[in-house]
Image 1: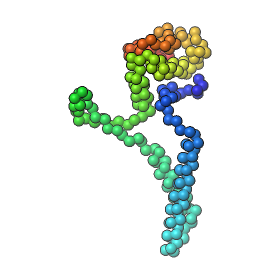
Image 2 (image 1 turned 45 degrees about the horizontal axis):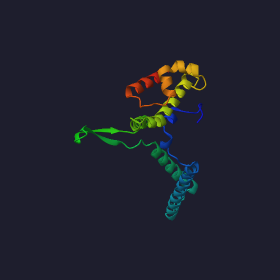
Image 3 (image 1 turned 90 degrees about the vertical axis):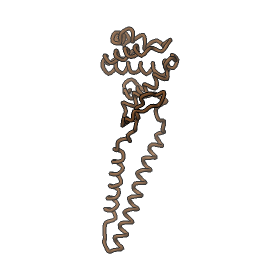
Image 4 (image 1 turned 30 degrees about the vertical axis):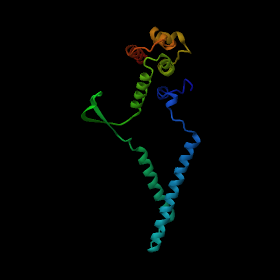
Length: 199
């Protein structure tokens, strides 16, 4: 991924979490869906035209086909625009005993929520494991810092190290450039993230 084409969404996703689907399969499923829609529209149009001709009503087969095809395409677009299903989350007062307070929180999964959940999982997975932190979290934070520097100041850590170091501050510069010997505490991570937000 080049520095100029990286987006924040790309930086928040881990490579293993991205769905791997070959482009040919994606193209094939789109062509198959169009062909299926055309076939269904043709079958419905043929049935309607045949039925109407049997009772003595003449209609244009092309217009009937176009009408059914338009209806199927509208249905397909409406299905694509439908929001994701809501999930029901029950609040638990005492997780050890499993007591529930009976309140439900209806939530809809969104892109921001997914990103937050991925980060939470990464940080939890690397807690107390510096090797995992250095492999899964630190490179993504470094890419995020480079992206912020590129967007706000037109530089990266590698293109202008002196200016990047001054903008990031010495603690954040050292943190991003040095593998951790221990997983940093949440307070330090919060300070580093706050520094990144100030860029």
